[in-house]
Image (cartoon, rainbow over all chains, first blue to last red; front, side, top):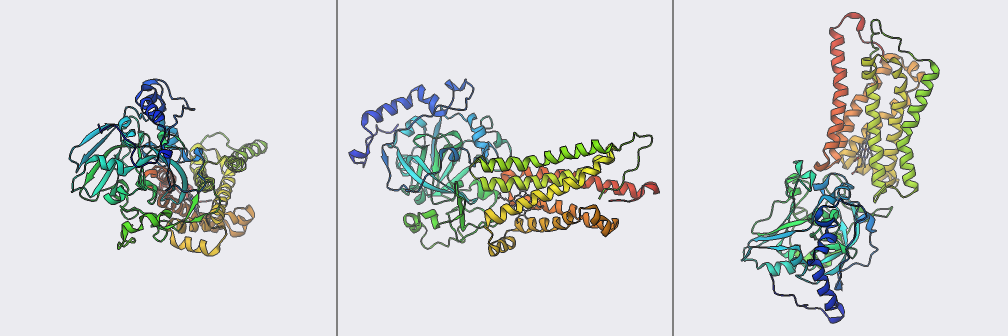
Length: 318
Length: 223
Ligand code: HEM
């Protein structure tokens, strides 16, 4: 357990009143939160009812990194997903993700760290104040959304992980439990789903560990209870339902690179100039819009992240 | 495509009174229109999900393929069951295949490229699955154009039959199109269609071989 959390680097006007914050934390620890946050009946014994109670998350601050673009409706954000552990179609996650049990949940932090640790989702939630980040999301398939995530910078986790000098990359492993995720029985991808970032990408202030969206606990189909959000990369880089964060020295072998190395690269930065072998990446369809719009380099985050790739050939390192 | 089935020895008469057949054809017509009506209603009521344009493209593609397979099912079904009037449904099913192909093609022309000829040409040259789909569609056009009895008479049975055998190639191209466009995680869909097509074409291959070695009165005739 880390020391009790202070409120670092935030002006008073930005923070949740401490009473609210403490109440939230207490609530999250209570069994009530276990029920609500996972969207499950008590201890998972009650059958899943469709209009699930949606637990609100207190957000202690808004972020200047948010876009002011119109957000994609909640309905679309939660019904049009790629989450192949639950099936091949866009509506498979919304249909089947109720089988996912998000409490209890723990996250293993290991690899090139001085002290490997397993922390509960409740403790993780208390590691940093939650903020809202409204980000563009660009899928490699050519569609995009604008989503108001809730979470905290991954850098906060990395700071507490106490990594060694050998840590050059970070691997993220999603849950792969055939009981909860029927499609991990099909050997189409090499389960568990593994994604990865270079350490400097992982430390970047835009890189978010998300636990909610639209002011609420993350719906299961969006990668509950904790997922990655890397807004300048294609969506599949943002691993969902993470159970393991491993710091490593060598570039990880990630799920899609293993499945189709000529189509998906380790970096997978959004890049309108580099086409997918089977389709153009120059344009995208923003969900809810009729006409396509041009895709921006680094999904519009070039100003913040382009320097991470200075001197690199982004055609070869696609 | 389908050789005339030998009449079953001692079989029941398998022709239907004209009125019953008309009713069956009307029913099949309405059923075949249902996917279209479903899409139309969805389009008018914002009921096609988060990405309606993609949904329309995918659904029309799926129904094109469904009707292609249904059309190819008639002959084996007719031969195995001896129900000869089934042949009277085949042209309609083939034309529905073309109908959904036109919608599918139109969805691409409109929603992907907004009628820009240059963008379409580039897409056909650039994306292999589009190239293959386009060839499949182009091959469907003469079949639809010569589907009438008048065209059949004008061409003469044998030439008409040879022309219409290109449906086998179209089916194979449709499989290639499908395999090429999906991600590995959805491979089960094109695989299913490929297996069904293989069964339908395999049946024909076997039938031909059997016929070749069979008694002379079973030699190829008809389509
Ligand atoms: C005989 C002709 C054709 C058949 C049987 C066919 C069939 C299909 C099928 C089954 C799908 C997949 C639907 C799904 O994912 O659920 C599809 C998708 C598609 N087809 Fe076709 N197609 C044909 C011709 C064409 C043509 C001519 C074009 C355009 C020039 C085209 C463009 C597309 C596109 C853009 C998609 C969607 C790909 C995606 O969702 O990523 N197809 N087609």
